Length: 419
Image (cartoon, rainbow, N blue to C red; front, top):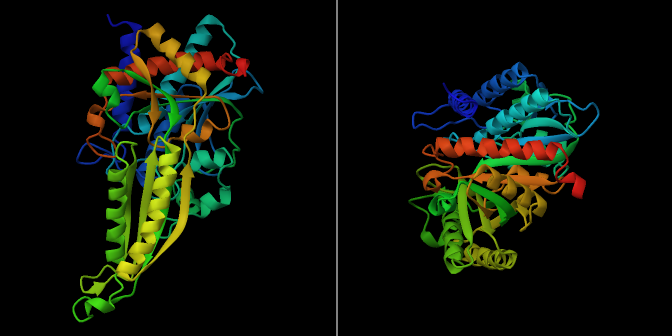
């Protein structure tokens, strides 16, 4: 006869298999970008899952989905969650694992309290943040940015995708926008796959996130002049694609120059106009980002990149426009939250170590407004934003176990009582 732990684990894995069917791709991943048809389908399934277990489901004005469990009328909430939206041809685990783990952990805690007769200090809320990925609509971490007041609601709703569809219209299309203001938060907890291979390399089950890498993200437009690819003499060309290509090389060369720092750089989502085989490009839009665990390294790399802009403009006879910038600095998570999760991991016999997060997460926004705990479980081979993304079932289940204990302590005031 299976014990209760085995039953709980199987329920998590079964629900994850069901969730992974929404937007499933032939390569074993998912494609469910923010406010897409597949996103709407999974949101409806998740609403049913929550309501079947006693949660009240609400949507706020930017499409954040909340499952509310009010046990202490009028008290604030301990929020826990992540995001269900994915990258194009993305992995099954990124974000989705954290949402489902949060739902199961919150449900387990609520059952525990019902059986013991305990009354917590705070209520529980599971959240599916809108548009964390930032692939269809910019910027990333949109839902949590609006919730925390870092982005104006109207700016988010007016953002549009490459087809010109606004967030407002897209959310209305999938009927996932409401008038809820969002719950008042006392604390926040999030669990996520690492999206790197350091935990797996070291044989560690749990990463205790203690700080973030700094990041500078730029949306650039290279302006050239449209002309004939054959007849226009080389000296007369103002080739936007040539300038964009030089930016790609400049970003990689910066990473090589600061390899020991380290510095991560990338150029992505390139849009070429008019994108004809016989026309020199008149304009190229692209996304460029720089990331480092050292703020001074990032600032120096940024200065060198700006200097390269001037050089590239002269060589390619183009102009480079910096349209938008999204950035954050190296910042610490709540140290007592790290200690709390460390002690709980010890009590469960789970190996652990402190770790920085390279990627941005909704917790990066939340940590600035309430005490926040961020946890990682290993990613096999460090694969992420890829259909081959995978985390072992044992690590999936261990993470839910730790998050369950974390929520229990947070709801009893483990971090707020010491502030």
